[in-house]
Length: 219
Image: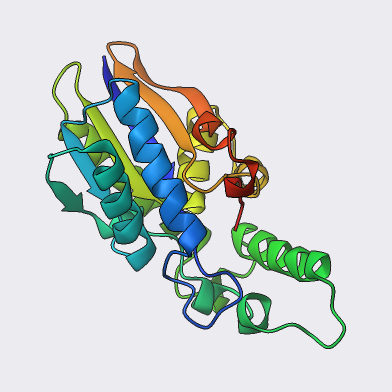
């Protein structure tokens, strides 16, 4: 059987104008992940990343931590959906006067739910259905690039990780939304590909961070 390890990027710069870059915590998370995977004997035949800066920086730091030599393939279909065109910009970059952080997160989640509902597709540059289709296409391409018994490590975002997991367990947008809210930075989701098809084995595994609880982040 072949293995896909879907890794969510390290902590990015939540709340800042340039979100698409790793924080110092994100770099540490990524290096820790790489060292942990190498210690477990993971040696990927294929490393894939989305086209976003946070994907590249996570892949670079994880490869450094692991000592991997495999080349990195960029596939933009593993990118996160475009928050700027999908969400109210204030959800990402601005606090409303007197607004607690928890309320800001609730506004963020409500915006995601509205997009994923499919009832307002004419308002979005990329619909949720189009997002699903490109993530599924990226997954199929990655699988096609693997030989029997080989492993691919994919550096992507929480949305694609959650949709891959939701689809494999027969879930729809509601399941995706629930999963996407709990994907830990640099967590690994394991998918097996074999004669019986493609199966989700584990979701959101982040034991490599547990010895340092300050490294467990969700944004």
